[in-house]
Image: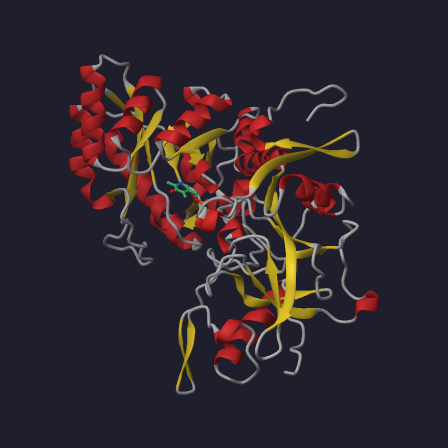
Amino acid sequence: MPSTPEPLSLEPRLERRLASLLGAGDFLPSLVDALGSPLSVLLPDQIAENVERFRGAYGTHRLGGQVYFAHKANRSSALLRRLAATDAAVDVASLGELQHALGAGFTPDRIMATGPKNREFLWLAARTGVLVNADSRGELDELAALVRARRLARIRVLVRLSAFDGPGVRVRSRPSRFGIPAGEVDGLLKTVEQHADALELIGVGYHLDTTSPEEKARALEGCIRVMDAARGRGLRPQVVDIGGGFGVNYLEHAGEWERYTSELTAAVLGHRPPLTWRGHGYGLRNDAGTLRGALGLYPAHRPVAGARYLDELLALPSPSFGGRVLATLLLENLYDLYTEPGRALVDQCGLVLARVLEVRRTDSGEPLVRLAMKADDAALEEHGVLMDPVLLGRDGGRVGRGGDDGPAVGAYLAGSLCLEADLITRRMVFLPRLPRPGELLAFANTAGYCMDFQTSRAQHQPVARKVAAWQEDGSWRWCLDEQYWPITRPGGEH
Ligand SMILES: *Cc1c(COP(=O)(O)O)cnc(C)c1O
């Protein structure tokens, strides 16, 4: 038997609603009994609360504008329909997402079409008159031609910019294969002017896949400059769209995250027993005693995430505009601020449940728990998010730490595919005790990209069903995701 590693737990951050769901006794086990494992549970009321937090950040800086939920983070109808019942908007990136948004109750004035678009997507966008966030000059040409040929009403457009580097810019922006390089503004504005009969430029924006507020601040300044150039030519843009990427804080304790990452480094260097399946380094490797590579993980503990990240970004000074803060630059120009949060808007909005099928030992004696799910059903690992699942005992009670069961135990989690790679996580997770067959593991906070973004039907295994759950008169209620509508039900409002 190997020496049992000391527990290096990564406890998930659970806010009130998600914690209450996990503490709801028999509710979750009876759902899995009825609907099978794996099962995704969504909390539509949480997305409405998250919208309020983003609105709060707008309010702090006295900015107007709109919050566009990046639909791609989750396919759920319940989330989208609940969102339609708020004053927020939605960002759709495919024909199917646009159809879904229209069907969920969003009117075209609350929909923005983003990303590279095919003809059918552009056609429906133009027909219904949604805002089009153009990804290239070619797309502007195609859209204008469509509007003229079909004699449609003038379409409102935003233009997505990228590559904000230029003279005097110290923070280099990440290369992106999307958007129009900010250096090509002249050509871009000429295109916009040529199409003035068909297109109305309402603003410019960016979406950067980075956690760095400095990079985003430079991009925002770049947008203000392009807005100035556009106004200098007589155009009247009023919107700056700063995209998404506000992030989620997945973990309860900063200390656990810091300790885990430093112990992982030590394990890669061979200074301690491995913490991962076959010594996997998550991007780090040991090159003859020297640490190489870079940690390819989501920064799971992020004290500044979501609406708070937006708030702090807007408060950053702008060196190239005399040190005034970014919010002031927007305010002085009476510009509206658009945001496109995906992951951050579905923070705490759901979980994935899986039944324990078997607990065995690996060759080296470590516990291996096989679950009735595939790795892609709760794709935390795929997205580099490391977190322990929550163990629910047979009576549905959440198994806590300590107590009679002794210290937490480490285990690897495997999926149900006959594939060596079908590990739910290559990190050894820590549980209050070893689970027993029939019990449930709950993967918390998976609504952002970790529910349905990569699911497959490999081996004819089922894809997780989705249900929506909400509280009414002090108890939990549920329905299938596609059955959910945010209407008043007898006996309660939700
Ligand atoms: C994916 C995406 C978003 C959302 O990103 P998050 O990191 O989930 O907030 C916003 N805008 C665009 C254009 C995207 O592609």
